Image: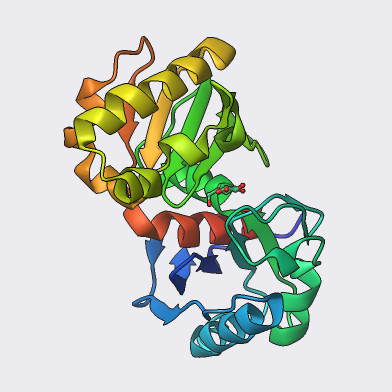
Length: 253
Ligand code: BGC
């Protein structure tokens, strides 16, 4: 069997920026400063692929020719094909992103869900390092992303941000973007929106640990202590590097 690669390129496609960096897979650290380019205002597959190509060009010449490349997308990914587009341009629906990016880069690209990537990164190198049992990572951002990890194994594409809660799609009530849009205080957001959501997840899955990522996790002390759960709930530690690191790690698996 070939040795597992120790270096891979990760690229994370977000709503405002597309970010990439080469990752040391032993430590989970960036080997170079990351490169960030704004997400095109019309974020069609072609426009996004051009930016992904631009970022890859900055780093690929410094990496081994066979270094894996992983890219995230905020939607369901089945065998390289994007199968949902809640918070991205609708033209992504049914687009074979893996094929498109591989063509633009001239190298094989592995496409993964953004929250799955963040979850794997936190489990291998961050807040949930070495945790067994069921770990549920939630990313609170524009939407709610989920990674389900059982004994270190990822169960991909768990779209629990879209659970129906009191007749609403959960992410339209509890995402961080909703807090900002509706001008909720941390207390209102935690008690009225996050509490029912995490209680429901806890009831359905009896997890061993919740990890909370997304930009707002930097302010975790303002809302996590307000939640009443049996399950320990802790902030993610890799911040906005998690997507890049997880994409690289999953590409190398
Ligand atoms: C999407 C998920 C994604 C999450 C975070 C949701 O709206 O359905 O696939 O992981 O947003 O970006």
